[in-house]
Image (cartoon, rainbow, N blue to C red; front, side, top):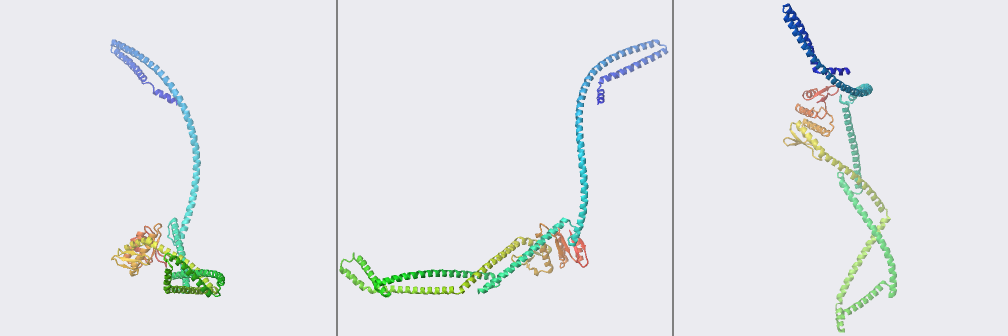
Length: 569
């Protein structure tokens, strides 16, 4: 480091000093050359017999030498003075450089310490990195071993998977997740089949219950002499309901009659009590009137009442006549008038007696009716027909209520099924019919333009381009199979939009001519973008035709088995 700084000092030597030093060298060289030349010239002149010139030359040479020496001394003085100044300047620079060197050495020591610390840290980090690298290498080796094991297990699994797919007749060379999806789809299909089986069994049970209910309705109708119609059980149930309502009304009427009977019995008892009291009173009255029979008492009582009435009337008449009649003569004249109109009053009295007799006769009729009702009630109470009829009625009513509840439940289920069917026909069926219409129109080259599925009817209607409509059984065999294929592919498209299922087709083009077959293949080509199409046929020409026109096929043929064509779009 110090050598480096001294070299820097030499590099920084003043330029003037170097120039002066060069001049000194040049002066000394020129002086020496002048001396040599002078002596050579003097020697030459002496040889030519000119000593004066030689002497003059020597003198000039000495003068020049003297002048050069004087000039060199001045130059040396100047150089020495410059060197002194330079020496002072260099000493000051040396002190500054030494101070800087000390500062730098101190900073270098600090930097060295920091470097040593950093180096120690780097060494420790390197040590940890080596350990981490060793662990990573071990983990890598372990992972490699695990990967080898997994590759081996994967190869075994793939081999077992392919063997399983071969045994189960599933598509080969698929990924495991596709098999999982396929199994999931198959499980869902099985679940749907189990649900369908359960629903069919439940429907069969419901049908049996409905039949049992209908049989019970028939038995009830026969027992109660109600006309039955096996084709209209609703009407039979309505008749049974009316019969039950009538029986309930009869029971209510019977209860009312029983209440009336109880009321009548209570009235009879009260009447008997009053009759005894009245009989005692009558005897007392007979004794007071000095009579023995009721007729005599009535006559006597009637006469007494008439006398009292007459007296009362006389008093009233007198009070009324007092302001009118001023004398006895006028009163007698009024008596004569009364006697004169007596016949009229007697007629009025007879009319009143007739009305009384009619009222009495009606009372007797009502008493006879009451006696008859009492007799009927007594017969019902004493006989067993009423209690057995009432018991049977209650039993039949309970059975009918239970059957009505079952019928209501079955009717509700039927209505729910009908509603679900209507919802399906309105919401899902239009999509299926619309898609089937598009496919059928495509396969028939626009000859048939529309399909209809009337609601609540189990049939299809096909409309031709000339607006004529046909039933499916009126179409040709090839057109029928085109219609069947359209509906089947439409169902697969609509019901598997989220999870597209594979579509299996087994020789459906047997009755197709070449034109129909090619149009159907174009439709399958379009559907292969969303579905895997698996086509089975036993006709090699058909496989060749399809392979050449539309698909890349893997054709495999086994003995005693149909030709199998796996399509790959």
